[in-house]
Image 1 (cartoon, one colour):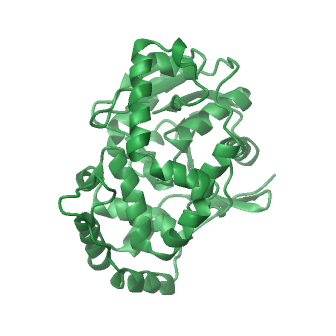
Image 2 (cartoon, helix red, strand yellow):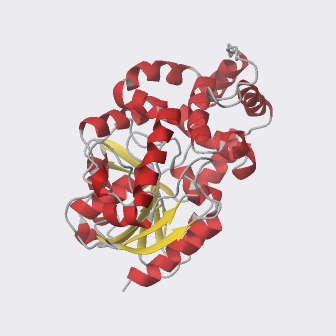
Length: 372
């Protein structure tokens, strides 16, 4: 069996000095008057964020907070997988695997891990190709296989709960198809979107409205998805070389999820920058982009047979002009296995980050329904 070893994050001073030099010598683009966020990341906002990054933000404090959690790495199949493992004080508590997406990281769950560890043995990996895991991208199905191996073969959990958002939701759905015997249940904030494989004639009226809103979102905000799914390496040169460029790219997606510069009040600049720093310092922008290309060429197995794995769905508060995920669509995507469905009042795409109190309670409520 592969043995995990304790891991401490220790970024060299030379790497931080290099970052500071790059930030100080940023060559700023121009911007049309009153552009706001309509054309992408707002220039004024990013200049203010960079000023804060240079003059106020303290990576060493963030690093100490990250190291205060029980971090581990394990070497599996020729690569390294990083994860936080926070066991509950309740010996018979169920295990819970928390999965992030892009452009967030394992840091997405910082605000909920202590609350969840009251009732669960919590495991939070850096997905392959991101964070402190190896820079080896994988498609969703392969990620699911590796993470099941982590939970069962490495950590010894025969069955477990899985929760995720964004890419993490797709991995949870893939696990339900490929490893149903290992899952107690899945908790997700999205269930995949209508696409070219969808029979639109079979959709209900709420599902049709949802599909239309998703299509509009992709036309308006989906550039990142198309570029990362088709030409990830072309993008990677700029994102790997410029920290401000990487921040702008990540912030553009945040704006597309309805946050924009309001993210300061929702998450705070220190939290936002720590997440960006995880990508920058680990040099995983390129490998995280390649995940999209692999999923485009090797579509995930997220539906098909009814494996009877129960799911809870906490639907995101819609962005302006958006439409809520209908329960009918959630049922369709989980083969009719939704046993809990709640509309979040304020939290959006980054639910555990935006409304940790709701997220923790919703997961605990779900566990009471499915843990025997």
